[in-house]
Image (cartoon, rainbow, N blue to C red; front, top):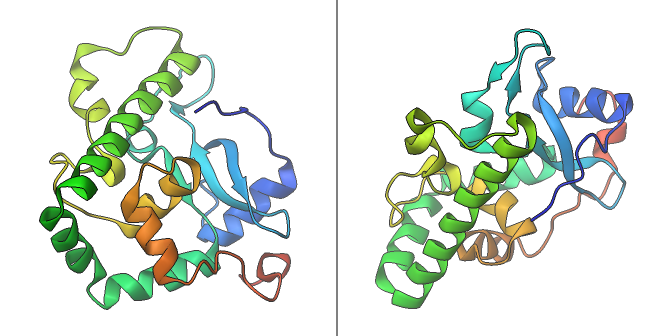
Length: 188
């Protein structure tokens, strides 16, 4: 997976700030846009600080991809509230092929983190970060566990090996775009 870094405008930054309700947006790319052209998934920047005092942004490397779309976030949050993290987790652990497919997705995110780090720091990752780089989608340490449907959905949108994200997309009836161009409004 190759990202086009800095492929966003000041308007995109403003939109993402409204979407996530924070002025602390640390993104390096828009990975996916909705049908209306607004950021849906962003790549978080692994860099903290300015060029003179830059350091590793550990939180961004742990999460890498961020689902910013308020429509998707709300409907996926409702799934989590209804217990779908544990329901999907039980499904995964009950079917060998689904579990193997998720192991592939987890391995893909390992390499994406490492590539993003190298793209920004032009170096191999330091030994003390190996635990961070080797976590799965959503930061899971054990590939048979499941934490966040949002993270899995975002990753699935970019890498179809993530069967949890596929399940989430089917649970929301493939309704990944809102009907009202919501992000064009001041209050998302």
